[in-house]
Amino acid sequence: MDHAAEAQRTDLMTITRHALNEQGRHPESRGDFTILLSHIVLGCKFVASAVNKAGLAKLIGLAGVTNVQGEEQKKLDVLSNEVFVKALVSSGRTCVLVSEENEEAIFVDAPLRGKYCVCFDPLDGSSNIDCGVSIGTIFGIYMIKEKDNATLEDVLQPGTDMIAAGYCMYGSSCTLVLSTGNGVNGFTLDPSLGEFILTHPNIKIPKKGKIYSVNEGNAQNWDAPTAKFVEKCKFPQDGTSAKSLRYIGSMVADVHRTLLYGGIFLYPADKKSPNGKLRILYEVFPMSFLMEQAGGQAFTGKQRALELVPTEIHQRSPIFLGSYDDVEEMKSLYASESSTA
Ligand code: FDP
Image (cartoon, rainbow, N blue to C red):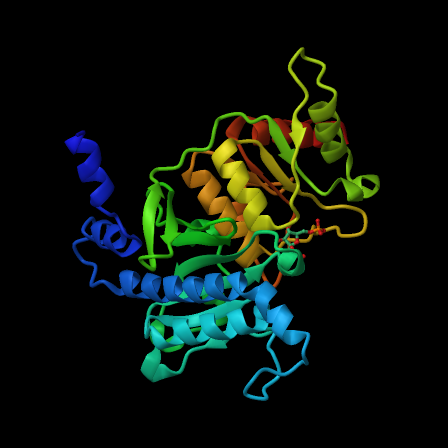
């Protein structure tokens, strides 16, 4: 019997244990982040369970639009949002919340106020729910400046000010990927234990990838650097092999694959959407933070993505993120365009 392997298999690193270990690196910490994280994890477990039942709910839904209590069935994204907002507020550790589902930011009432601001998309990729494709929750966390005087400015900060970010992917398994600014770790939900267990320690994205990921249906509206980059992926002139195209159309799933296998994910600006599609606070920033922490890069076409300073909570930005060398190539195409302009 391999005792070392057996010891490792039975020594389960749960996400809470991991957060407590990280806490140990900050002697001044009083455990507030660990408490906040446990409420985010609760939200993710709820959504994981609801997503698993989504097909079944549809079956029940066929009998009518109301459930057994006579209530109307809530859409999964609306339900997920309610669960996350309630979990975050009741943690007593949050102050300002920005959700993709709420037009306005939520300012937590004084008695329940804590020092963190959370920007999140409770169910990203929701157009994929009905066909069972992987979807996810994305979150980015900031520290409040003055707890008694919270303003929108507390969430309109550059991504470099984020203290943690992550996503939970509801797919063939449920995986939560987290960075607290000290590398990236992935945890998989063990349904029999109801716990997220560390399965992907210290994730590093390959320096160069063999995959590009973009909605090519928008190609006629792309700018020249994006069009040139994709052309080079398909018809490389330097003797390398053509890259593979993989596009799920669900950001969490596309970014998760990019993080693990390498390559580049693009949601560029185009003539119809000059600011791209993806939202800065709860899509672009958290994913850019994770990419950089894993050794990759994130670029907007003009600058390092995390250095953007948003002026509106639902603002969008073009984004190119992934393997260091692939993003570097994209950056040089934009640089040579601006030098010839
Ligand atoms: P969805 O519209 O299904 O909610 O921003 C949301 C998002 O999905 C991302 O998850 C995904 O990467 C992107 O939009 C897909 O957009 P396209 O359909 O335009 O490719």
